[in-house]
Each structure stands twice: as structure tokens, then as C-alpha cells.
Length: 376
Image (cartoon, rainbow, N blue to C red; front, side, top):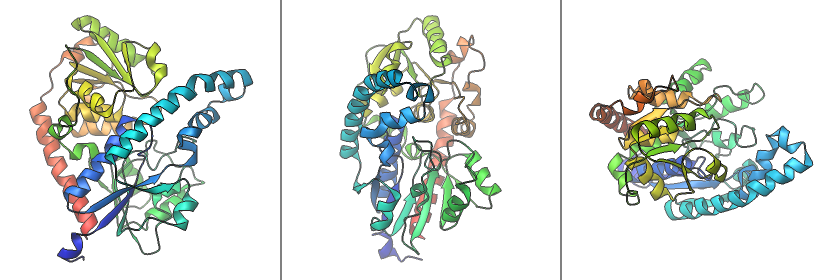
């Protein structure tokens, strides 16, 4: 056990998916930083960005996963022409926000670089988001299983997620060997906990880092409210149901429909398009919406935390377990869209007093687990 004086000076170095041009990815990293620092400890995000996810390589990486585009020279050129400008602009915007919000280590681009010169820390942490799932290239990156940490180093995870449930047989033995070196494993979803249990690894469950801060803490970061009432769409995947349903709701309620995204290609989808809002604007749009229609886990989490009515369109790409988990935790599974014509669902009231009580208790438990992991 660490003595009291030692606890005041624990340095935590955390690896997570902080550098994707995605609001949830950056805000969960920031929330982890805030939470650890609130416990009186030093914290840094390892500025680890796999080469395939660097802004300069993102379009090439995406193309490699799209045979219908990558196999045709003309289509490949068109794709690059369309995607590279928006990718660079979004990358610069999020890089600027990261530099303002996060305390980061020197930059790393590979597991080999991390092994050669790992950050100096008392505790190495795998943070949240889909760290134990495939990265943009489709590969599984064992950097996120702390394979680089020095021998005998303390290893923990907080709210780690698989995204997709299955890990390929080619990767699993080495991945599980890495995880068995952890002192404590805490994951975000019940499905992840159950999966690890089936492999003989005991794991606890905690809330997403963004939920360690309450709604008022996020409101203090938000931009001024947009004018007037509106229905909001925040969509990550390509299911047309999301936009189709949002249009029906907006028409039924007589309200304008706003769509926010860091992806310029969503400009052609339903709603008045707001491209690349700042983090402060993102928070404000979610906080002040009459209803949010979303397929995003973090869209769901922020709606719950900010007490914004929501309708959930579950993603169909095998990643819905994280969305279902938080809805089950807050007894909001009835907010999942089952029928495209069920526009009344958007107007159905939510007992946010009860939701806030649940989240308050879960927040307290998760912070206690985080404190215990770091200080033991």
C-alpha cells in the first residue's frame, strides 16, 4: 500500500483514443484528466496516435477499408479529392482543442516507439473509448493493452471498451496475456465485463468518463444557447433511419431540424447542417435541443447527463452494446426506436429526477473505484 504522502504525488499516464476527430473521443479523455486530478494526482494523456490514424494518413487508411473505392483508380482519386480537405480541416480543429484541454506526453506513433522510451509514470492506465477494438485500419493495437509498460509497472484500466465483441483468434492469446498483467480491469459495458469473464479475467464496470462530470460541469464549458427550439441530429453511422425519423419528429412538432457533425459529407443529409462545431458549441447544441435523435454512444451519454430528451437509433454495425448498456443502466431502453412511425416517442417525458439519482450514485461509485485503483 502507498502511504498518504505518496498518494499525493502519484503520476498516472493514460493511453486512450484521444486524437480522433470526434467529440466523444476528446471529451472522454478530458473528463478522465479532470477526474484523476480531482483526486489529487498528476495526470497525462500519452500522445499516442498510430501512424494509420495520423491526419496525413487518415484518408489512405479509410480507402484501404473500402475495396469498392480503392480498387478503381478513378474512384480512388475522387474519394481523396472529396475527403482530404475536410479531413485536414477537422484534424486541425481537433488538434487545437486537444492542445488547449489536454496535458499530453511527447508524441508516439507506434508500439515500438512506446517500448523504446515509455512515458515515466507511477501508474499506467488504459483509458476509455474503443481501445480494445480495431483501430481505423481494422487492426488490433496492443499498445492499448499496455504491452509497452516496463516490467513490474502498475497497470490499470478505466472504462475500457471493445466496441465490437469479438477479438480475432490471431490476436487474442497475446492480448489476454497483456491483460493478465493488470492490477485492476474496469470496463464500460456489461457486455465487455461478461466477455472478459468468459476468458477468465475478472473485471468491474464503471461509467464512461464523461459521466464522472455532472451536467452542470459540462454546461460551464458550453457556448451560449442557440436561438429558438430545434430538433437535433447527431449521427456517427450511415443508417438512413436516423435522419428519416428526425424529419418526422421535426415536422410533427413544427420545429427546425439541425444536424451537427465533424464530417462534411453529412451536409447532404437531412437537417440544417452545422459543420465542425467547437466542443463548446457541441455541448450547447445537445444541452438546448428539444430532442436529440442519435446513434452515438457519447451523444446518448451527453443527452442523459444534460437531461435532454432523446431517441436512440441503435447502430447496426455490431457496436450497439455500449449504447444499450447505458440505456439499461438508466432504465431508458424504452427510448430505443422500434418503429419509424413512432413520432410520439420523441415527446414522451423522461423522469430525469430519477435518472439523475441513478447517475449520481453511479458517478460516486465509479470515482471511488478510480481512486482505489490509483492509490492501492
